[in-house]
Image (tube, rainbow over all chains, first blue to last red; front, side):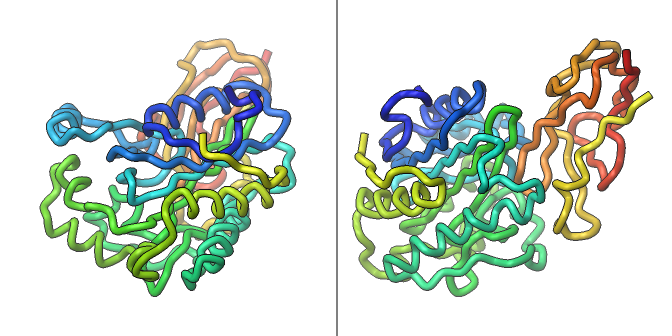
Length: 241
Length: 82
């Protein structure tokens, strides 16, 4: 539960469990920030809130053994799994990190991810403005384009950001690639050709691609959590739950 | 009559020409709403924003249906106060 002693920390969970927790966290008035980093062992396709899962998509996901769910924040679809860390920061509406302007509100979150990546040796940067539109045929995929303060390495997107604003709480969420995802799986669920998987691979990067042999996911999750917890002004103690 | 709009300050710094997408209406025309009650969810730059009623009253007309877009300052719906 969001109000419990283990509300913040590092969690191994399905994407569905993650989304359920976020729903609970956003539903009631929030007194203190919540910071969670998520490790997912199974693949899942996470649609942006404006994307509607078709019957065909549901069938293809079931056939591929992939969980399919819709998140509360915007943006394109994400392929979650062992190649990715998810992060969730839920802030009270009057928290100093919450500002009205949408582009400005992403700044601290992007910068925190850059600091985390640089700490582990990945020379990342947060984009300052929206770049030229990418291939419109890939606009359904989160990692095909760079939005305000999202994070890239050598032109390849490595961290995607999104947000949801509710009366009681503000949600910041991120997806960070620690290894190259099997993009063909995402394309399969969307019924897209394999050429789009190749295109997604070309416009993205990951910790493994940069470092060769990155620290294990647990270690990366701890350092990401510590970075985000410091930004949200939480005591810096995290355990894997 | 009062317009329900996305607050102007959320648009600060957003690239000119960008529009917000109405993701979902939480009320229907004719519904009575209380001030501060969420009436719609709108997406702007990967951010899903809960739009609340600026006053208590009745939703007179929904001007931008779900899955349509609205430009900065554009009214989403009209509200008859009271």
